[in-house]
Amino acid sequence: MIEVIDIHKQFGEQKVLKGISSVFEDGKCNLVIGKSGSGKTVLIKTMVGLVEPDSGDVKYDGRSFTQMNKKDRTILRREIGMLFQGSALFDSMTVEENIRFPLDMFSDMTEAEKLEQVNFCLARVNMPNTNKKFPDELSGGMKKRVGIARAIVQNPKYLFCDEPNSGLDPKTSIVIDELIKEITIEYNMTTLINTHDMNSVMGIGDNVLFLHEGLKYWEGDSKEIMNITDGELFDFIFASDFLKNLRKNARV
Amino acid sequence: MPSRNSKSVYFFYIRFSSMGKIFHDFGEYLILLGRMFSKPEKPRMYWKETFRQMHDIGIGSLTVIAIVATFIGAVTAVQFSYQLRGIGLVPMWWVGAIVRKSLILEMAPTLTALLLAGKVGSNIASELGSMRTSEQIDAYEIMGVNTSSYLIAPKILASIVVIPMLVVISVFLGIIGGWAAGVLGHFYSTAEYVRGVQDYMKNWDLVVMLIKALLFSFAIASVSCFKGYTVKGGALEIGKASTQAVVLSSIVVIIINFFVAFLLLD
Image (tube, rainbow over all chains, first blue to last red; front, side, top):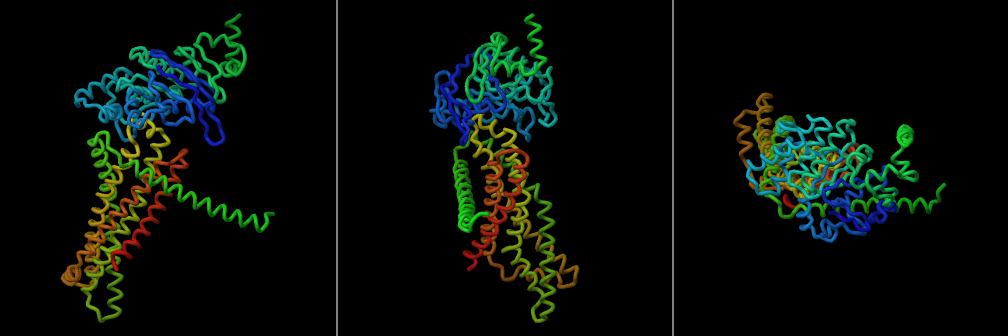
């Protein structure tokens, strides 16, 4: 479980996060949604320590991340996996080396054990026999899958996904969403996904947090979100006339 | 129209803000270097990365260094042969000594460093810059890797080992270039040239050359790493950082060159 307690962050004069608090539970896909510039990415980066908050706290199963020293943070980070928007695979390494890197750096496993773990993760994301390929030989969807494989190779307790569907076609997006959902349940992880994609919200959103101008505007599950009738969240979800009409017809 | 007073205030504002930026950047550079000296998570991984960098810097630069060094030696020999022939009183075997001395003390370390500031410096800055903008550095950080150590220390260590080797190679090739040009141009015989290369050899010159090479390699690698690592933005900023890395490390090389000569060749 991850607790975010009254997080504030300001860049120069611009207040990006204005006191965000929430609880993200184990075994659930927690989605953070909002318009561009609403503070989603800053929230995720603050939670994993890539950005330091001005005030507030982030607790990983009761352990205060913001008050930890550098050494303890490094240890905790081994329990965190992250899928980046552009996958962030290491260009100079093959798929196998990318996934094996955390094991090489932090584990005492033998070469055979590492290879077995890498192949297990690759099979888990439906990418077998791609060990020797380089990232520039992969499609966008394949890169995301390799990114997921690298994120789960150390059996993390917490998984962060920053825009996992950006740049993917709708069908591949659904595949990636389902994969994240399955892995979350299988590993009983606390998963936090930052997305714009309403398909993801409806498909895998166990808990949805809507940010607006740095504030927590709404929180609930994907069923409740359909009952929203007005306000910023309504405008965000039903941004197109097509969706508005679809909802109207469904109600009729 | 701004008054004369406001113009001078603006002038001082610009002057002091740019000075402030220089001090700010220098402070950040020192902090980054300080963070580099931390205990490696897995030393084996650091060595592996260091050897990869040695290969990239060394083998990757060998051809261009070989071509430039050979022709620099050759042109030095031709220039001095022309000058000494004009004087007529000086024996031609001096050309060998002049080529050797100028290569060891100046040409080989400085020209190699300037060449590598362009090639290796821009390579390092753009590699780290693109890793920063594509979130690869963030990915390392999330895993718990000390990126200022893992991504920078191997590059600096590899440069410190490999660049002096390239300087030594360029001295040898420069001397061979000088021999080939002089003999082919009938300025002197092989025996005269060899005598010149061997005579009046001072070991101190070699020490100065290696000190220069070590300082230059540290400057090129560390400045380029700093420029690449601290990139903010996108492709345009990577290009700017790469250019700044080349320009700044070239200036630092020239300044170090003066101080080493001033302090060690008195």
